[in-house]
Image (cartoon, rainbow over the protein chains, first blue to last red):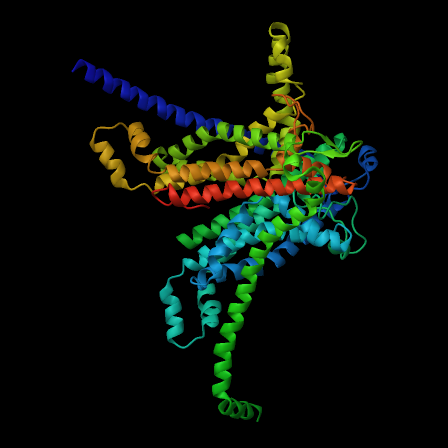
Length: 290
Length: 331
């Protein structure tokens, strides 16, 4: 009897200790996160200036002599490269997603699903190497196009997966209704299933885009980077072009103090961009669920 | 006039047109979807093929296993390449990162799934997802300018000067306390993989049926005992799959590691001192690789990285399918 009460007390204490440990580790993990965000926001805002958005980077001497430099060409390059990635990845990803969800018995699908997960699990740097061999080597030059292809490799498996689950969420009854009124199968998919799954599709593309937009590893040896604005905008497609994540990396490992400061500014712009995409995706999901 | 003509022509050819519209449309649609799906398969296969092909020069020169065993990496003079330091660096950093991250991540998952009231849970969940959303270069720049110097001043230097006074034998093991090295990279990696473990573990725990918990409560278990004996065993498939996927992330993580590990290409590595991983050596040397053999060796490292990532991913998929009772799903 006495032993019993002792044991229940010990168990209660154990219960309390474990709860304390759970809360403690949650706090321990959250702290560095808040510190990182705090540093990026404070240092980043201090480093931002009008020049940052309106000038090109130029040589290190330019920053050290205090002449105006900025990353306008980098931001434009990021938009061009990300947009190219989007154009390449969305049709392939959505097509594969349609394949997976609308033709569930097709012989291709078991293989496709495994290969898609494999591709998704591969480190982004390998996707950059693949784009290097497929695009940079034949073209003979680093280019924005190669960077777009590399980022597309990052996005494709994510879009395929989110498309599949968005389309699967639409009840089969809707497809059957479409078929029953005499629509051919492709019209059923394009005119009833995909509009119904619109929010899910857009969310998936946004998530994939956000993931790709933060990647630097595939860009370092595909779009390579460029301290200057290309002479005309096609130079951003066919020639080496700057992108924010890759420029941030170059600035951070450079030996110049002025460039380090600029790196923080690039950091806050990149972080804001990515977080806006994620928040947009999240808000869309919430709207769909409510 | 025009309208009438159209109507007439449609009437005449309505049957074949409709058949074409249905039959051909469906065919074309399937073929297009098929080829878009096929392109993903080709991409995955092509990645393995291309990396092997491009690395074949190096594999031929040193032999496949010889390349993996070789511990010299000298692109300058002798042109000898071996991947062992990088394989070692990758395995050590990612395994230790997982070891550091696993229990805190699991704790957050338990807290979210079992304890947290809705609004706190929502806030913490969003914050954890935020860690996953921060681009790794942004984590890297914080690591370079804030975390690594702080670790050097507050942790490495005191430990190092302590060891040089009291235990000089430890010095080569601890290594040069410059701040950029294995320990720094491992800690940052651990932070970066926590959300993957948490997300999957939490999903798996939320799928545990209520009856499972109620039965344990009915036997007089405390809340922690319910979690330990009824919830965690039930969700172990999802928890393990999350851990292994996180390991895969850690293996492939490039930028933050390359910025913090100090990039030393030769053994011996030490605890605080610089080292290198497979992705970090690729990102550092790929642009500057001049010789064919150097480039090919980097591609060969890419191929080994592919094989390791593939193995880790297949293991995670296997675990989700076989061990999990709940069939926990992968994000």
